[in-house]
View 1 (cartoon, helix red, strand yellow):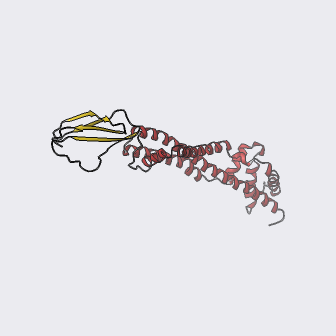
View 2: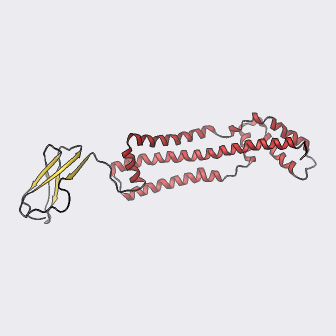
View 3: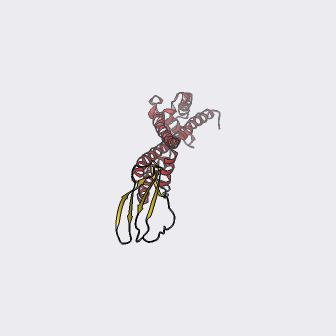
Length: 270
């Protein structure tokens, strides 16, 4: 290396260091955009699936179908916004063109510096090219390097919007967990894990004599007791069916302690 070429190499090295830093920021922006889209899709899946499942208590097959459609959309967006974008080769020439598009005042100095660097590295220089002129262009670019707005090549507003979308999605689920952790847990278990858990009900009715088979002497009366938990209803009806096919529905009487009773007599068959 001769003394005359050392400043040229230093200038190119400084520019390429800026390119490498900008390349890392572009890739970080791609990740942020992908995360923001996934976060928005998560909220878009959670809200309607929660409302439908809470009101209609969807069957497992329907919940699985909804989850698979959500996964398919997420996979498509990740492939489009992350995998495909990261697969694009961002060489120094592409970075230089991106910077120059946002900063016309550079007058293609960065692109020219890269081209001249490759030309001077060649063993033979064309007769119509001047090594001194190329070195002067590279040196001038290096002198203006700090004034070149490399950061403008990155759409900061776009990155901020997707970062805000990701943070909003995280805040949504965190707030949901703080306000009503029970419903979040039930939704996740039903719609993500497909567990056989039921949504909590305002009123739960349970036979007070719940257990195995209840046996009574044929012809005796049978008193049925039902306990109510939660919001106690004003009226409870007991539906019954005998082995002969006879069916009926009778109102039960409230005892005032969250319990309802009904006596069937006489009981002649199952």
